[in-house]
Length: 217
Ligand SMILES: Nc1nc2c(ncn2[C@@H]2O[C@H](COP(=O)(O)OP(=O)(O)OP(=O)(O)O)[C@@H](O)[C@H]2O)c(=O)[nH]1
Ligand SMILES: [Mg+2]
Image (cartoon, rainbow, N blue to C red):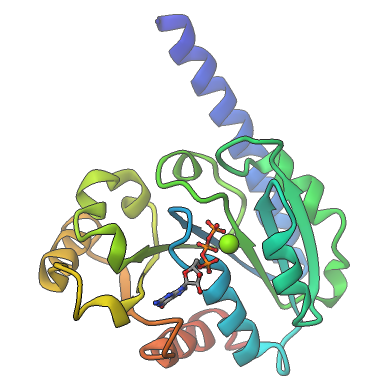
């Protein structure tokens, strides 16, 4: 048991080292990098598509898709931005080694914003830093309002939480006040946005935040 814990610590500290060198690469190239994490199907690719529609004409954007198939990649490629599939080979998260490999396929001279779609999972991605500046967690109404309480590590490490699929609020038994309270308790400095990638509601608040905090220079 102790050996297992030491091995896990070693793996994570090696990962942190590579993530720190990736962060330096991003900073040297004046790139802001965002790691989008969530359960499967909560709306990561949909959020990225809307974000690309909003910003791709004013900024140069690249997307790394952590996945085992290229379905999402093809959707993102339709936006004519640089894209890389970081094939996790079935692993439940991206790590800094996979990220490093994917980053080497990108022409960094021509990127202002790098968006990473992490593997759909609310546990493992929280432990593996990727050198990104901002961690975004997408939660969605059909998943239920208890996700912050059940997966606190994921929410604790987030800078932004986006509650997606608010078009389902009318038919779901989802308590938005409880969700907000729990998110605030776990991480009081977190930004919280309520959006629907289907209707577009709330997305402008996310865009404004991104513009002001990450794209202002
Ligand atoms: N009703 C509704 N459906 C949505 C919304 N956002 C996304 N969807 C749908 O939810 C499904 C999953 O959306 P994706 O954007 O592919 O989710 P994802 O998190 O990228 O999924 P994985 O990559 O498979 O983990 C798709 O059928 C979307 O059309 C929303 O706000 N409301
Ligand atoms: Mg996706």
